[in-house]
Image (cartoon, rainbow over the protein chains, first blue to last red):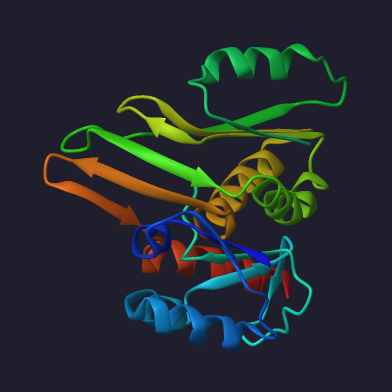
Length: 80
Length: 148
């Protein structure tokens, strides 16, 4: 199982900040699985402005996630 | 360099006094920036972050800036922030003013677009997530061009 985190507006769309999810081989596979359960979330995660961190490291959108413990989906950042 | 993320309301004056209290012989300039929660229609702002990851990402872009300074302090609020309260405070200590001013400006441009915070504004009409503007992104890109 992997922990999936949603931040900002993605949390609203997902309806939760965190969920446990069966391990997937790649981010693409995970996004497709999430989209099947929540099409709106799938659409939001497909937006190229959404960044992803796997086990606290930024990765590309198609990165492998085999064995990852924590996957975070982050909409555009806005500090300050 | 110090990075502090806090859910508690803070006083920029008090933090600055402590920062300047540590006397540094070489210090000739201190530039600061305080970002405030605007009032008007806004009832409050809510900021969230990704613990550990947020501190790490800020450290990554702040480190090269801190290397041009004697010291650098970044304080950032999370949680609910009321109008008039400080959201962010940055202080850059340098030998001369040019490095201090430049550091604060560059750092703020990075904080706006590259620091993992998410900000929601609550008004009487409901809540809206705030995302960086085209100008924020342009300002931050300018530093990248300068550095390459």
